[in-house]
Length: 268
Image (cartoon, rainbow, N blue to C red; front, side, top):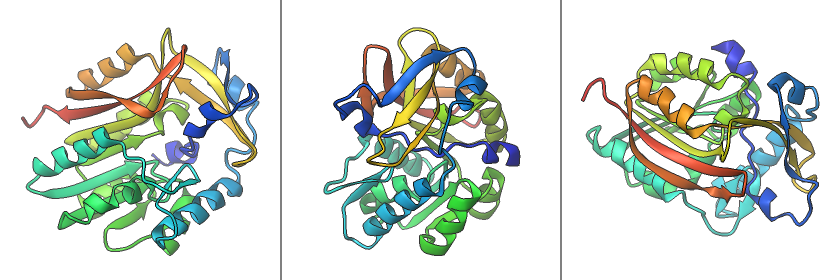
């Protein structure tokens, strides 16, 4: 698992990219291999990304702003209502407990996004699995009795008994996502909640995502999945699709961002 964690690109997918009035930023090209795009990438492991997210989320934690997504702050929470419904569904099926493993969850962005509702559940454990530098900052500045930070999925499950896996804006930044999922799903999660994941309107596509420098300077590989292949993977792992939904990041003529609520049928 460690080699996968080390190769994990920060899940910084910016919804604001679509609103930038220029063609310099966004998703560029259609490349034949991940390595080719990787060779063009600059700044994806920069400490500036971590610090941008850190400062924004500290403002949320301290009640100075309402919401943060990908280091960008908002004066009003933008909920992913289907994701929240999936969390509540998993909790209701687990006797009212909510035990989440948030893979690639930054410094707890999704936790803080939904904290108003999570605070009304008595038994909550939210474990973020991230790169080492995110985990170090998370443990020092954000961890509390509910929000925890771990280096591996196995560690999170051992410590917190997580049964709900959240994958939000992360799989598209993994070089070999299905190999990573093979390893993660050995942990036998009961529910998987996928959000903010891009799908090609034709065949799978590997592209270069260019971030506006007004946020931070970086570009990195991004994958637009083939939806049929993606869902077939989970079906073959014995996960049933409970619901599919449109994600906040929207769509264009070449891609659409989707989310899914999946349930493990092994124990049903």
